[in-house]
Image (cartoon, rainbow, N blue to C red; front, side):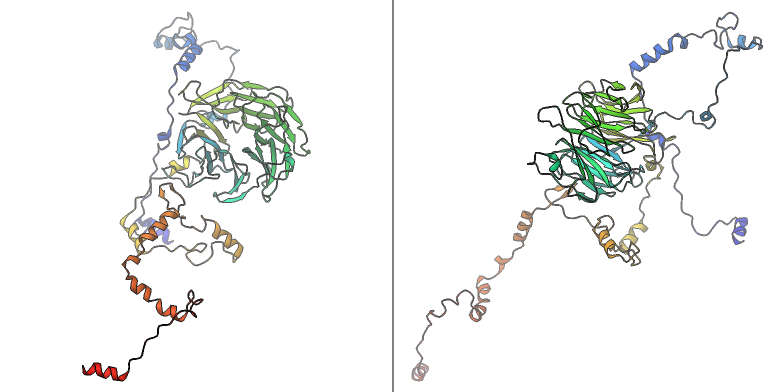
Length: 586
């Protein structure tokens, strides 16, 4: 009742109302891509159009219906309106997209872009979590970076960056199906498992390189190439390596793998590098592509002695197959090779490829190809055919791999991912940047979250004074009210949260070595030099410094006790009283 009375009186509230942030209506237009058609595209459009665009036809509204001659608009309007209808003319079909205003939506989410630049070298690996909120990238600069669309500001910087394997390139990254952990595969022999926030959880064992039979080793003995998660079991994943094996691992057991698939080659030595591996969507098959050009498929319920399906010379010998992807129905396999080809295979007829796309330049062995979320298109990146030429992103039809759309992204694309939930395409480029392509009409969240945020609030004098007057005291694992953040008196859980640097809000540790990320490090030699400079022994009196240990040496002789018995004692003659009196009288 009081609220209604105040509203009738025109009083909406007391005090000064906070000013609301106003979002720019045309905020997405700032990130809109400007495509300039090339001369070849203009020439192709003119050939397709023909003379119909230049001269009006007899069916044109400016032509005379009787003679077919071109006349004025007034003469056409003055003509009789009664015209015999053509019975062969069909009525246009009903399109629900036109009624709801979706007819003008782009076919591909490529109208706008967002550039994320923090790597210094080519981006060789890329992965998105199942929700599409975070992006994980790996590069030839040895760094892995975590990006959060919801937590980024206009600077577009990652919230975490680290080196998983020191000076080794990152070959592959994969998020688990539940998004709670991810795998990092580098040029080392040991895959690493990380939590969602980037904390290391496990480093799996390295095999014995002196054992000939690869089945008897507990881990890989050569560099890793790729990895893949089980689509239904979040505790199982596979890795491929240059030791001619694919190993099946359990997340809880880092000391030994569950099973080993030894790939036998017809080349000399019967070994070959397995460059890519993957699970089928129904987890019935494990696929592997090898350096000798073969493509193998094993059933997961078999003993992995020999492959169930094999294609010899699927790609050129000696070239690495960068990616191996199954379609949503599990019947089609898409491969992207370093022999500059993209091929589609049907596992029901596995001898020959269904379609082949030649002249798809691949400059890096990790160049991949993916299916679109609706499985109607295939997307891959191609490099420039000439030195200094720009690469492009190819959108091809799944039926015959014909190019439907070619998009210039400024540099050569290496890895590309198309997330089905947010409907955005993330491309890793050779210049170390991530290009996020999206459409304001069809995309959801992701890169749009940055533009939905208002401008940053400028700090005022009151904010600064409050921060100085009442500094916050942060106790790891405890809230401001003195309660534990977990809410349960569980000592094991509290100890686990204390070890997590993000949850415990631990300060940054001192830099070891020469320094990194703008911070100057201090070595052990510098600490010694600093301590020598602080030494003030030269300002002391040496006689006093030695005499202060004289009494201690007499009472507790530690070093002279061995010869103290034979040490000569001084004997002085006693002075008599008579002599003292004589000296006094004189």
